[in-house]
Amino acid sequence: MSSIYRYILENNSKDRVPLKAELSFITDYFYLHRIRDDGKIELEIKADGPDYFEIIPVSLQVLVENAIKHNKATREDPLRITIFIEGQQIIVKNNLQKMASGIRSTGIGLKNLTQRVKLISGRDLVIEESNAFFMVKVPLLT
Image 1 (spheres, one colour):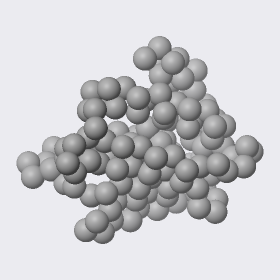
Image 2: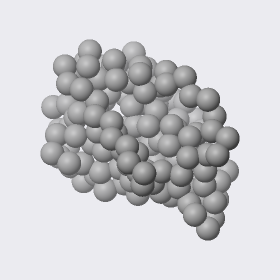
Image 3: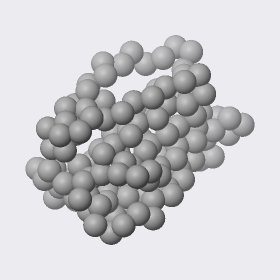
Image 4: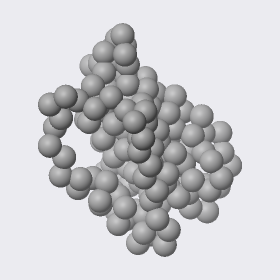
């Protein structure tokens, strides 16, 4: 818990952080969810990209949090979140299992992230949704 809080405090005002630091943070953040939701959510990180990549701080956490918040998950049908690099983007993808009585979303987290990405990188956040998955592509910085 302290490493999560420390990461947010130390990087909150920065425009970019090393990708490795962000991935380490998301691993710690997810660990807390795994304790609470034992067997109901899964995270796979396949991001062995170059060490020189950077990313907007806490951007992956926003996307993982959204996946957990807006999808149902059971031990029989877990929520699966995958993070991987494709070209100059890091992708957060989850199977889509919308809650029947869904939490009313304000869209603030995704909207703020979209604006931060555009302001800092000059590029767009790419959002794709199908009946089977929800995916967000975040530009990597060099």
